[in-house]
Length: 322
Ligand SMILES: Nc1ncnc2c1ncn2[C@@H]1O[C@H](COP(=O)(O)OP(=O)(O)OP(=O)(O)O)[C@@H](O)[C@H]1O
Image 1 (cartoon, rainbow, N blue to C red):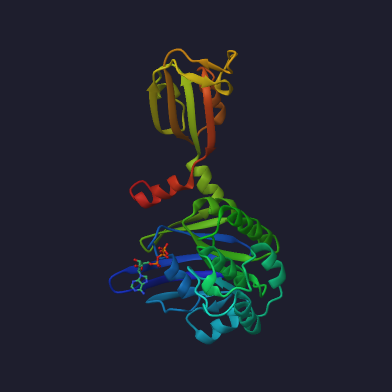
Image 2 (tube, rainbow, N blue to C red; image 1 turned 60 degrees about the vertical axis):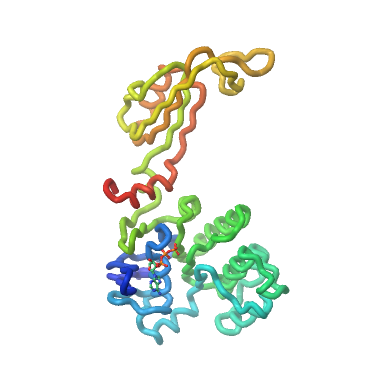
C-alpha cells in the first residue's frame, strides 16, 4: 500500500486551476520531494491531503485513508505529522504550552529528543519568536507524536544553514527508522540530499515524477574548465558536451600558484603568458573521453560537479525542451 496517494486531483479556484489532474504515489519509507516554483500548486495539494480543503475532482489517500472523508481522515491523522507553510501558532502562549496542547491530542513520545535537535525557546511566548524559531517549534510539533508519515510544506523555510543541515541529518535518520516523508520545496539542494524521488509541478500540472538519481544522471555533470590559449568550443568536441560557452581573456595576469601546471616564482604566483579561455558546459558522456580531450590542453583549473538542479528545474519550467 502506498503511504500517500494523489489521484486525478484537480482544484479549480475559479480564476486559477491550481491542481490539474495530478496523480502520483509515495511508497512507505520514501522521502519524497514535491517541487515547483511559487504558485505551482504545491500547497493546494498538501492542504487537500490534510483535509483542509475539498478537491474540485479527484482525491487521494494518506496511510490508506480517503482524504475527502472527514471521519476516515481523523483516524489517520493520529499517525501523521504535519508542518504547514508559515506555521501560525497562538501568539499569546509559550512554545511549551503549544506543545503541551498538541501532546494532549496526539501524544509526545519524542518531544525531549526533538527539542535537543531543533531547540526552539519553549519558555518564551510565541509572539517573541523569530521566523526560524516558529519553524523549529513547528518541526517539533510535526514529529513529537512519532508519526508514520510526515507531510511538510517548505520545511526549511526560515532556517539558518546550520539548522537546515540538522534538519537534513534528522530526516535521513528518520528514514532509516522507516518513516515516510512528503515535503514540498523549491530549495533544490535540500531535495538532492534527502529525497529518494521527486515530483515536479508546474502551473498545476505534474511535469515528471522520478528518482533523484535518474534526474541527476540524465542531466549530467556541470563542467567549468580554464585552459591556456585561445580555444573555442570546437576544442571540446566530445560526445555528451552540451550548452558549451567559452570566453577568452588576455593573458599576462598573475595566477595563483595552485593553478599553475609548473613551478611558481618566489612570490608564489606566476604569470601565464598569452590568452586564457574559460569554458562551461554540461556533460552527459563518458568521463574518460572528456579527460583525454582535456589532457590535450594545458589545464589551469577544472571543476566537475553535479548539474545544479536549479538548471534542471529551469528546463522543466522553460517548457519546450522538458
Ligand atoms: N484560496 C485560494 N483562492 C484563489 N486562488 C488560490 C487560493 N489558494 C491558492 N490560490 C492560487 O492557486 C495557485 C497555486 O497556489 P499554491 O499556494 O498551491 O502554490 P504553491 O506551489 O504552494 O506556491 P508557493 O511555493 O508560493 O507556496 C496560485 O496561483 C495561487 O494564487
